[in-house]
Image (cartoon, rainbow, N blue to C red; front, side, top):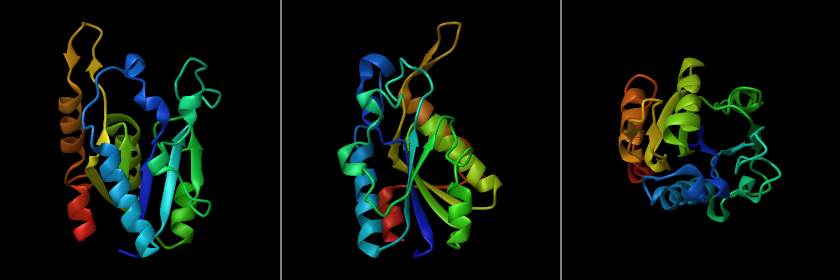
Length: 182
């Protein structure tokens, strides 16, 4: 596992504003992400952070909004690289792929917010680029989603379907405890 990188995606305070985002699943996502992060740090394994810098001024993730800041328990340390992005994938418009390859890293564990957007897109791209990806299902979360016809899909269903679409084709889907157990 020493050449397996932990990729933390968009653990930002702005996602706590449920009046903006709506209903969310998995209230334990942060705690499980913190367990993974503590384990990686204790082992001295590589940790990378992605941060969404929205280009929309009203977004809770816009760089001028306080919600752009990392959640305290998942914030990077000084020696952990941070990749700012304004699209769903942490591998577009950043040096993340080049930095992973420069360090000889071919295996990734990914977690963050949201399961169906940035975590999903980064995971799919990582697999398409040849990385061996594992997603920490219980260290991810998302929100209710809706269609123009008014149908609303609960966050847990969206989360589960996103993970099911990744499982076995783009990534292994495991819990934080399973990943730590190795």
